[in-house]
Length: 429
Image 1 (cartoon, rainbow, N blue to C red):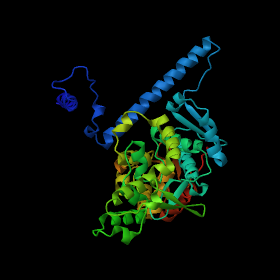
Image 2: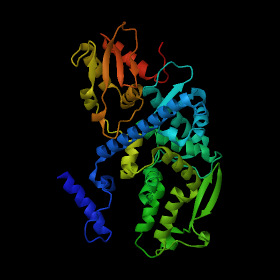
Image 3: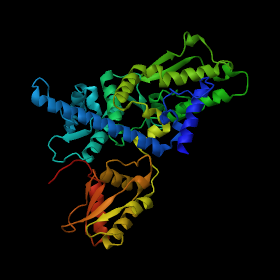
């Protein structure tokens, strides 16, 4: 049945291009038909493709290392992409390494080492690296991105003192996060993912980023009377503020002398949207786009719709805390009805939303959940030795919580909150 469906899809494709009978030499690739796949299937395809590329990069490194044993002119290489960074200079250290990194090395599995910390990166250190570096790079105080209070979103700043290398780095980091199956905290509108997939931003994207402006544009388009020019008093310009100075930019040639009327108002709105999302930030986005696709480009990515790609990158907030409890597994002396476990879940469900999100961050390295939802997030709680004076300990690489055998509910609550309030750093001590 599935084979028949694939043949039908290929025949439809050939017919659309004018063929009168099936063409034998058309390559059969089901990836040509993204509507066949749901978000789960697309995610699986992308992850499988990444695993295959990683393995190819590792095999190539091993072959080069074997050759170096017999030919001294060939340098040995690490089968992983290693980032050694200091917390106090995470951006500078990462840039130094990534600037020297060859394209093929981006396809290797990523391992992160924080200087002065003992943890071995089995996934948890990598998660914290992405969290910290994106927090630093995207901070509006650096002027690389403009923060919009109404939407709590950011967009590329059309005036910045930073060079394109940093925007290229952010693109690389985003690509590495997807490639290494790690959720990152990006407060960008859907327009970013549209542009990454070569789709055109629209008025809906302006409404998401700048709600007041978007609503005004919609009112302009919906105005039923003919006196648009007299009522709105607009021309083809946009007023922008940068570092306290106000500038007027023309949206089209001689825009200051071109009034917006009923006949050209759609053209004005389109030009406004194009300026915000394209023209004003073209060089910065191009650098970001190049960095992203250097790591994460490919045909499989094109299967995604923008909202699906967004969910892949940043996860979602469709929290179902009861589902999380059902998914949890137990080790050691613990089982679902153990008194400490029952007490733990009582305390957890009584926590406010922000503390619950902090717990996710403490245990998994992200306060958001994967694209496939809470059902795909499996936590493990195991018993530990020691007394009630010890704090819970997380192993973010494995979503594993070491929970002492507390016998008092208030002690458990106090120790759990204390642990999740101090969720950065790794040590074996």
